[in-house]
Image (cartoon, rainbow, N blue to C red; front, side, top):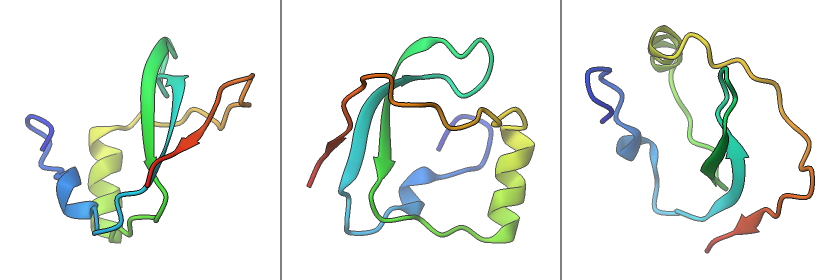
Length: 77
């Protein structure tokens, strides 16, 4: 759980832990580079209440999808 926000990411994962990994940047200004992203291959489902809580904690989560710009996306198994 991230300190003080009440969101437990571990509870959102299932047995399939395959994920995509790639180098990127922050999703909020200043959009700094140097972030190693891991994105689950199988989508996690959240309730409307969970999504609302996430929006309260991370209100500035609004960066649009960016082009690959030569980055390599890898799939773990």
